[in-house]
Length: 194
Image 1: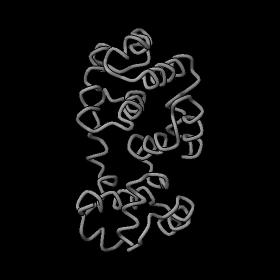
Image 2 (image 1 turned 180 degrees about the horizontal axis):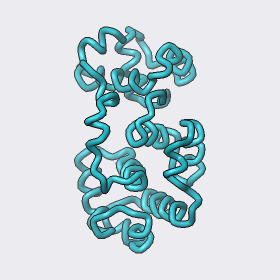
Image 3 (image 1 turned 60 degrees about the horizontal axis):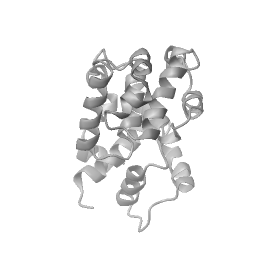
Image 4 (image 1 turned 180 degrees about the vertical axis):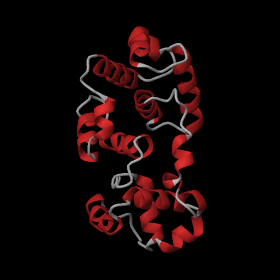
């Protein structure tokens, strides 16, 4: 890990200027909706669909705007039926008070993840990315993330990807900064030939 830190410099997750650079309009709801939309899509395609989605809901991604657009309205932006339903259900949960981001922002990581995965269409990976990149949590260890597994294998000279259970155990050494360790492991894949 020391070699990765030397090679890639300071971790962006620790930079307060970068963490504050999220636009004020990028609410927790909007960030989570964006994460759902971006799942399993290439960057350019996801960005184009996201731009159409934002336009479809009137320029601001809020629960009320999503509910007003309806599932069919947000599908018209190019979202799959399941993603449109997930985002619409997320909006409903927020509007009805089932999901309260102010309360979640103060909750421990495991409580945040449990609350989010209780919603249909939101899995552990999405919840963990929300904790890391939206809430700025520094001790999230996404052991099922392919990039973290592949980066760990390359960084530590493993012939095979570590299984999530093995990676979970290996990550204990990085507590309480496992998010930072994950960030550096992603950098391995950013800069090295696959």
